[in-house]
Amino acid sequence: MAQILKPIRALHTKALAIELPQNEPIPEIGILAGTNHRLITGCFLKKPNDGRVEAEATKLEGSLMTDFLALDYVHTKIHKEKITAELVDHFLKFGKFNS
Image (cartoon, helix red, strand yellow):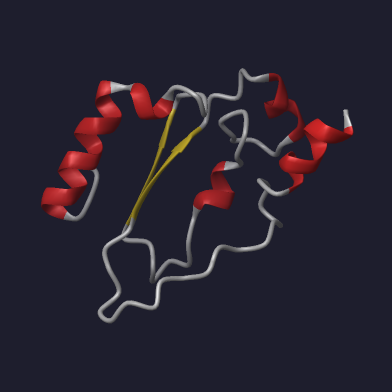
């Protein structure tokens, strides 16, 4: 059980933050987060989560995050969905996920 819980601690909201971008100007950053926590590990995390990462833990400071969207997918499936690719394409073209 300790082997499961150790990595989970690194994926919740109070985990050590990833270093923020130092680019000038700051690039547009869009974040897609999953909210379907069917994976067993999801019961150890605050909701909403994707079974491995709390949605809140994916966010950056407001001024650094251009857009954020939560999708009803588990961690292992979100990147395989057609809608995810369409949203990323839209973000790259228009700087936001939705029109």
